[in-house]
Amino acid sequence: MKTLKNTLRRGALALAAALLPLGAVHAQAPVPDAGTALAQAPRLYQQHCASCHGEQRTGLMGPALLPESLARIRAPEVLRVIREGRQATQMGGFADQLSDAEMQTLADWVRTPVVPAPRWEEADIRASRESTPLPAGEPATPLWQADPMNLFVVVEAGDHHVTLLDGDTFEPITRFQSRFALHGGPKFTPDGRYVFFGSRDGWITKYDLYRLRVVAEVRAGLNMRNVAVSGDGRWVIAANYLPHTLALFDADLNLVKTYDATTLDGKASSRVSAVYDATPRHSFIVALKDIPEVWEISYDEKAEPIYDGLVHDYKMGEGIARPGYLNVRRTPLQDPLDDFFFDQPYRHVLGATRPAKGSQAASAQVVNLDARVKVADLPIAGMPHLGSGITFAWNGTTVLASPNLGGGAIDVIDMKTWKTVRTIPTPGPGFFMRSHEDTPYAWTDSMMSPSARDTLTVIDKRTLEPVAQVREPGKTLAHIEFTRDGRYALASVSEADGALIVYDAGTFKEVKRLPMNKPVGKYNVWNKITRSEGTSH
Ligand code: DHE
Image (spheres, rainbow, N blue to C red):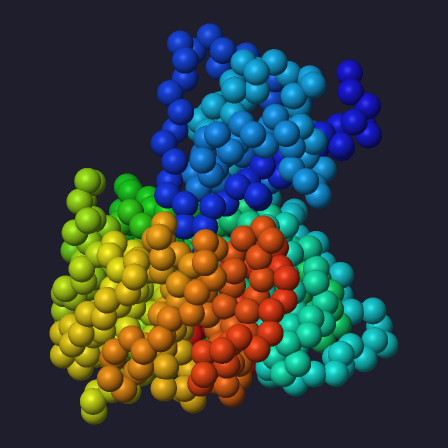
């Protein structure tokens, strides 16, 4: 029987952390060898792992160990962490306690589904919430001296930390531990004071940037994609892969309601790919992975009622409808769409269709959210990652420029005609493209390319020509974000001994370098809350 101390030392199978190779592809589930070894797995798991990862593998002080959570981690890495542990966490190695065969058995088994599937219901969400409101009498003023509109939040994936950076001096203000494996952009309240982080394990953290503390946390799901904050700051919503739900909260992370991601007849359900705030429409837009519908959930109290053919609990005149406020309005599609991108007024959503198995031939479609119909097919060469694109004025029109994950190119699309106006070659496929209203250049990475992941390409938005490259030879150089005034571009060297590099956005020269542990995304308060056309919202 292990002592509690030993249990804790062994604890927190912070398994996935180190392992998240940027841009990793989904690993194959291992094939169990004859089943005999796997039969021992539940006993081994309960004995060695459950105290930190939960009896149902849904996570406790350590992250969830579900196929959904481990899909991005290569199988040998899972084994390595069980064997050696993970530095700077409570996850110690098990090499001195378990045989090679037992460790392999555990590594294989945690990639198999939990049967019956773990549940996460409204009562679980409510019970998970913790809050530490500001002590009475504490002033609501920043604890630091800096421009509150030019702060950066930088996510360091290596050891699950967040650095808060002064965007004028590029000096860190604080660095704090985050939940395990944050994903998607953190979202700010409209005044820029609070920021909400979402973790792949389902946790939402509300952090007070002024008083430098976590004020509330809640677990919205077991495997979450992202969070969105309403333009009026009143609502926070989370998109889950597991369970198939959306969870809506008030601004203090009290659960308001959950939405089952099912078709109208309830016969099919879907993973929720992502949820986006559409401030000009006063609504959230929802991308569903498995069913051909796009959802809109209005947070406008005067929203039109929804007539969807089913009898619900709200009577409007002679018909029977549901209020439009905080309910789902469905737009049927031909194919499931995800990876959304919006035009600036949020009238149109551009979504990517997934390629058929074994094919690279993804495509994208444009749906008019008012008319609720598809209005165009977009000819995009490879798998697009539209959420990482930008818009800007060009040649009397507005264009969308987006990297595609399939090939080394940027697709530039006229948003009036929905035709491709240029395909700009880059040295390799990339994830992110960023710019700013006050710079003539757009920057993009090639982080998915083994040979060019160390290169950022700078494109002149006037000519649509590449004009420069910056490199960190042999490293992964990715994800750019500009200062509030567009004068500096910040990029990540996404390695464990990585760095945040500040470039002069006009000369492309490095002006500062801060060591960081696998930094990924960085987010400027002003650019986000003003919905700059050069960044994600
Ligand atoms: Fe992301 C944003 C989907 C893999 C880092 N990513 C998003 C968003 C979506 C998305 C839908 C927009 C939501 C938002 O910001 O609220 N990402 C996906 C995938 O489907 C994909 C390809 C596979 C997956 O397993 O999820 C994927 N993403 C990755 C990575 O491998 C990255 C590089 C490393 C990581 O941390 O997982 C990664 N994704 C990011 C970042 C953002 C993001 C940094 C926010 C960008 C921004 O500037 O707003």
